[in-house]
Length: 266
Image 1: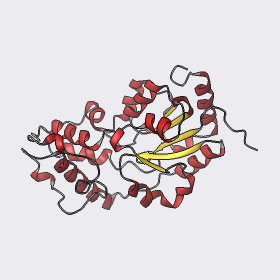
Image 2: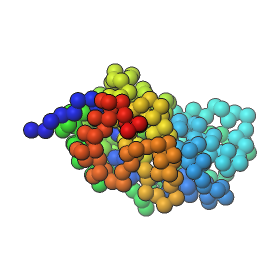
Image 3: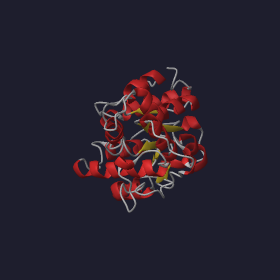
Image 4: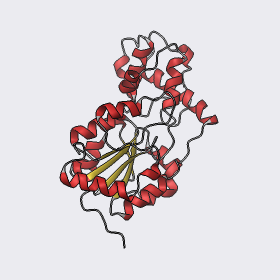
């Protein structure tokens, strides 16, 4: 019989980059470098795990675009062309981005390029992802999935495993990224130290540190990614290369650290 953990009640698992392969870093890198921008750690820091309308503005700044007088009106809510599916009527080719473009234009161009990328590099469940969820649940944790895209993304690629996720199952955090405070306190009524976060972005690690939340980093293996470096700069103590590394021993260790308040100070 498995002895259950005593502190952590919920594992909040990021969808893209943890449960599913990272299809965002390569597209953002290509989107920027093909337009002459230099791709740096600061660029990733400014764009990753931001609400879509903020990410669009940051991309425009990196590209030196003047978004025009209505730049602040981009909603990034998922209603912009292609924001949910990566394509759609009215999607704006990157070549027409320029003075007067809106954040929604930037998003549409980005998601159009992402749709083309996915033809050759489809979204896939990462090796060990479902087994990791089972391990967490076997130890007594509830599990929930979260990310910046709408729930249709979860339904399409993880819907067959929906019974492995509690509460709403999937939480779209686009309106309140990174969203881990809200997931813990508003969706599940838990303290920060009762929620384990697994994410691939250092911005989320930084927020977890500020809240003293247990955190495991699973940075992208994309060759131009700076997320591992940025996680280390934040002081992330638990960084894994594969989901198999998130085993019972690591989960129990984090539970003990959470109980003693040493998650970020051990």
